[in-house]
Length: 104
Image (cartoon, rainbow, N blue to C red):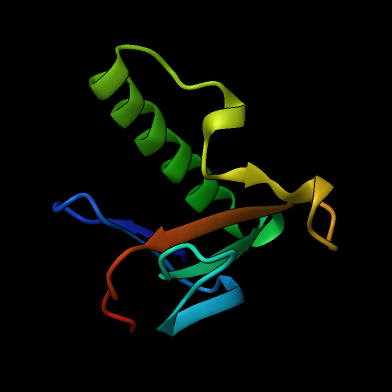
């Protein structure tokens, strides 16, 4: 069973992620900056290969549409978590919003 769904409105639903550093109900402020809602979502490569591929395809498509080129890996929000995650092979995806989104 796939753990990723690409919706027609451009959103991506990924099931079974590990939530890290969640600030979902109150905006988090650091160093006097305006507070934002945020979280990091960890996607283990072993169980989320299809989700990682799908997210990377959407990122590539959107970057080519907007900037007429693929973004370098250092500019992507989907990072290889092998350098930062405890479990080898994990992917880390931070998300930050200025306004609260629906949490399901």
